[in-house]
Length: 218
View 1 (cartoon, rainbow, N blue to C red):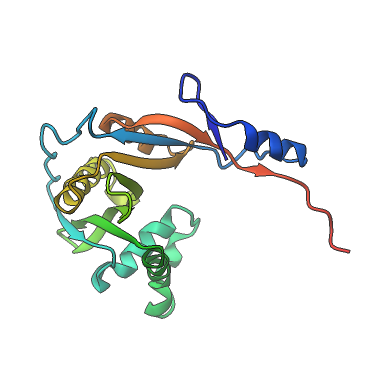
View 2: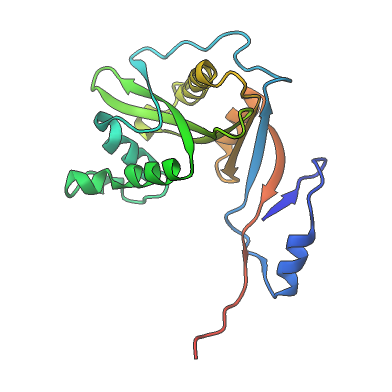
């Protein structure tokens, strides 16, 4: 559930009171922050998009990841939570791509469409990172900024910012009414939170996981 930030907008305290009454308490982990960017107040593309670092080229795609990138996207997404990335790619290709394909089916089922930009390492032809944003048809002004991830070997070149701004330009070509962009990150992801702040995102609220003891089954 969400909690107000110091100096931020007020948030309903009812859910926390209800959880407390049921014996739950904040878990002390999985905390993060919601950030919002109002393009009417600040346009991070006002001065144009930054140059793509030497040795990389950008590649756009829509809701469905091209087959050529499906394994790489799955690997990059899994890299945020896996402790043994050396196991990537083992097993049949159908298993390696299952992560991204399952997510795409869920997104399409919910009526969302997505926009992506990836950075391709020109020397190897491999996907070095990508970013994703999605939205619904029914709320033309709202955009959800999703995952942005750059492979460890390609960090330090400013690709994260380049990808996000290039994808914002991508979105605007097809969704010119977008005005509000929402995103969320775990507290531990300070580099991405700082990158968002540099783009003009403003913290709005904290999200906190709660937990409660569960009686053993009889």
